[in-house]
Length: 361
Image 1 (cartoon, rainbow, N blue to C red):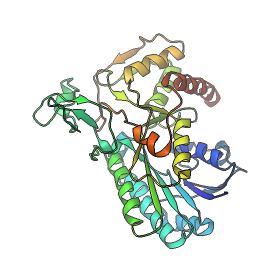
Image 2 (cartoon, one colour):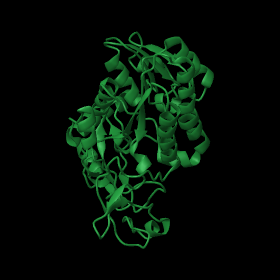
Image 3 (cartoon, rainbow, N blue to C red):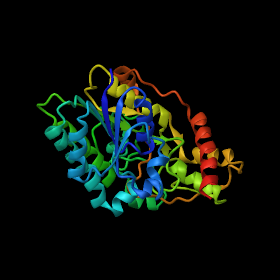
Image 4 (cartoon, one colour):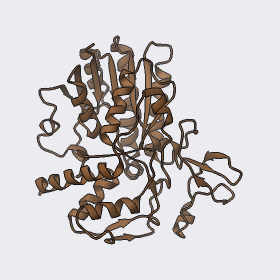
């Protein structure tokens, strides 16, 4: 059955792919502010490939009037809320901007739904694994707990391990959805607040809320202009410019890289499932990849020596050490699982990045 689907942030990296997929059988409205940091400055609507396929509304979720107008006019059945400021580092420099877009923007959406969205049956929120902070770790007694934030003074000495409050080493393990939230950055805190706003503000209504906590999403279409985008994009830019790659800490920062097409499929599954999942759901590959391993792979795919890197010992406050998802719940609740292995996905991404970088020069 054809649905009216509103996608906030629908012109972005994930949102535009989701919109293209869903507009084949549905009436889709894309609501996006087309911020130059993400989209550049020229012909951004046309660049998404959505013109003529979806309704495109240029608007900002932080502007309640613009969002109210869109919800009132369209009265969607299903909403995917992807509009957000992303990036840990930038959130420390611009906390007001992050709170305005992520927190106030989400409350604006919920107010618009309560006032004008009589047809809305489900809101699917794009959240982040960042809300777990350092994530799950096992102590010497075999107990799984949330690792506390690493101490700056330890990292300055080159000690990057996870430790408990007494300084004992903790062993990282995949993080499940039952782990308590422990956001370690402004960005992470705003994503957790989005979850609270969505779930608490629809209480007592017939609107369902589904929450997907995304790991590190990558793939063709990711911004190569944005200095706060994913680390793979940043490395591709540097290699293209002939630079060596600076790898932070000791190179053993671990990430769960999940391919964008798999993430889009997870959103599709979440929107079409018979019942809204009762818990937030992790969306990742479940496979650990070190930043050093990834850097060497990127260099090799560009025809460079995998040794063209430096392990610098530098670090960023708020960065987590080991981020890998336990994804069993996604299989059980959504019937979803990732299909694109990291080697294959990275090859697709680098091939696209090479062509895009040539076009940008």
